[in-house]
Amino acid sequence: MNFSNFVGGRWVPSASARTFENRNPANTDELIGTFPDSTVADAEQAIDAAHRAFESWRLVPAPKRAEILFKAARIIADRKEQFARDMTREMGKVLDETRGDVQEAIDMTYFLAAEGRRLHGQTAPSELRDKFAMSIRQPIGVCSMITPWNFPMAIPSWKIIPALVCGNTVVLKPSELTPLSALHFVTVLEEAGVPPGVVNMLTGGPAVGEALTTHPRVSVVSFTGSTAVGRLVNQNAAPHFKKVHLEMGGKNPIMIMDDANLELALEGCLWGGFGTTGQRCTAASRVIVHDKVHDRFVDAFVKRVKALRVGDGLDPAMQVGPSISEKQLQKVMSYVEIGKQEGATLACGGTRLTGRAHAKGFFHEPTVFTGVTRTMRIAREEIFGPVVSVITCGSLDEAIEIGNDVDYGLSASIYTQDINRAFRAMRDMNTGIFYVNAPTIGAEVHLPFGGTKATGNGHREAGLAALDVFSEWKSVYVDFSGKLQRAQIDNAE
Image 1 (spheres, helix red, strand yellow):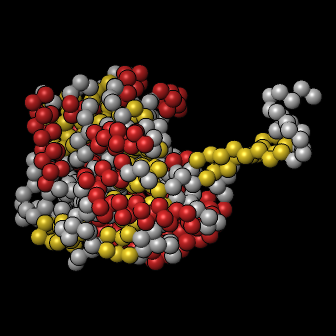
Image 2 (cartoon, rainbow, N blue to C red):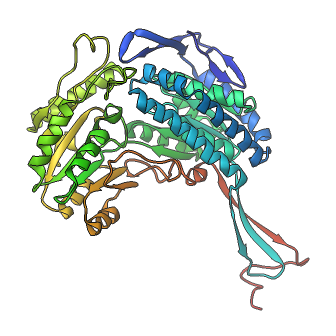
């Protein structure tokens, strides 16, 4: 099937007339569809459409904007199974996970649409008589959004819904690897009644992304992806002083103390390390285990990892799907070789799966390295695949030190029965997200999402913090005294 861009309320081909294919990573014989390989000219048209639509959309009362978004959430809920199956076909993760991805888009849309009847500011007493002081949120303008392939409906919802409820307009560029799920989301917004030009979507490669981050009419750029590309996005946006939100990489630790419930920790490490085939920025790619329980944990963990079923995500018996692409699979395989060369012990996995059930996809064995030290590349660099490094520690202090000793600061967790240890780790881990007796994945839409250091640039998605990315504060003073009053000067009474 041939799909189109969505610009100014119409589905249109690219000016280039070129297209690219979207294929199933579990079975590359299956063509999902062809999508426009858009150009800079296409991006300029979409930005112009969003710029024109902003002048009317910003004046729509926020509760009315919210009503449209509530309708969109209901439509997505009605089509959840269809959207989940299509997402598994184009992205690969197992059906339970794609259902969760769609559910997250539903939850996010309901949650942030409700802010249409709030969008709270502040009121404060003035220091002067007969004067009223308050602050309000105001929209910013055209927002460019560049989203990744691993959560192809959830992450667009994290960005688009708060932008719309605040009164902004949007140009979305989804990953070339998962355009169908983003298209489904945009189609729903159109059906729900979002006016022409308020939401626009382009598919294509880096040229489109560069245009969306440099165009002078774009006021906000929101990007989720690798730290290397995020750095370029930031540089592109800087000359025009655009507001930039970056959500980038992670190298997230699970710390297992000697008093941990090991069965619970095992389940958490399996889910955290191999859910979404390890293709999450929050994946638990490092497990830091107290030396008193290290051997018991590793023996059980390796046994459980070997038993994981890898295959087509549409098969309900499967627990781990494919890598997203041949390029990503090759990256995983290269890091396995790096781990071997660095002297880590390959406890299980380590090879590409090529049997009959895996021959037409990008499958890799779930892999565990033991004997890993904090200086090894496999313990420091984001692999984004089904590879977990196990590191030994002798105390909580050492676990925290190892946990913090990477460039990233997205998520961390601890397994312990000691509340004092839990609160110390909660305080001392330099991450944006922290879990106690749970893995490093599992964020919920009503709390802020994001990280520190090379993970981000200080902004947050989800929760009410998302509103701060897509709105500006305006302080308003109403003087009804009928005379000139000078703040800080005429307040001596």
